[in-house]
Length: 403
Image 1 (spheres, rainbow, N blue to C red):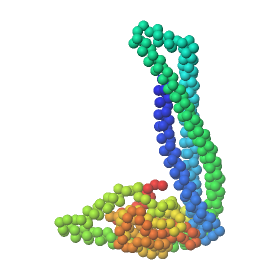
Image 2 (image 1 turned 135 degrees about the vertical axis):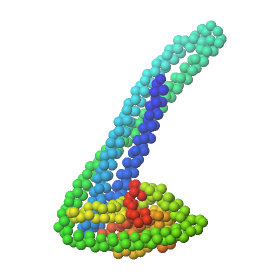
Image 3 (image 1 turned 120 degrees about the horizontal axis):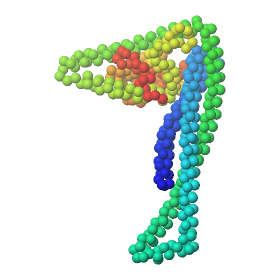
Image 4 (image 1 turned 60 degrees about the vertical axis):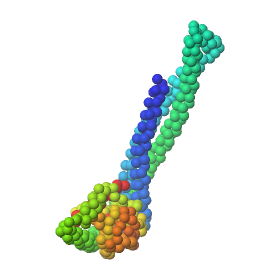
């Protein structure tokens, strides 16, 4: 019965280790990614600390850092809660194992005492020789052998259970140390967050005193944004018109190879929604898609046709899917812009310092297509990324894999 209960306990231990191990790894990966994002913004903030000309960019970067910091604290809290649950479960297992070892040792001691008494009194031999027949003597001898084997198994079970107990005690101590470390990290992050919140509030006050300049800069940025959008629309409009002409020409023929190829490509791209790789290996979304309130100017909305991803200076840019380059152009304010067609879908990469492909090139997923430029004033390195379905703008965050 004891052996059966220990087997059940071991199965439960293994199941808990698998489920808790997966959850712990997920939280650890998330925490590491957030620390990486904060490291990126911290470097940028250090570079622009004494530069008054980039107060707005510094404020936006600080906002991004605060958001990441708050998410990091939330993740640490989750890890602490998860660790507490693991400690509680491990403590229960340790207690159960200790109780089982006590029972096993008690039973084993009783068996040893009985065996010793039989040996001293020669009752084992008397038990065999007092048999009324030869067959009964053999049966009694086999019984004594089985009893002896069972006693040895019990001894081994005690040793095995003690080994498991030692391993669980070590795990428990490790988890307790991890919990202490996480609590210390949480306290540090709260202190840094409070410092950043104070700095953000001071920056906001200073920026609101300079609203005229900010509005001028916003109008200038909107002009640059319109030029980028016009350039993208021109390329896509042209490609859509070409496809329509090909479709009309092919419809008058018996076969329609162009149409079939286009459908296949569109399906491939569409089926990868939410699973596409990011255009840069490291980084996070610093400006999201769509209409949103201006970070500092009251009652003013700004619009973003894609997402801006903050990354390392001169980071490599990669194609997110197989396709064909249908446009490259230099846009003031957005540097080099590149458009790749994927059937009826298009991906746009702008703010590139260097473009490594040309119009008409066939591109493979994860192929290096350029490098992100670095803003000379702010030291910021952001790639502007857009996704279109024919003439409709889509939220790129819905298409790339979540980090």
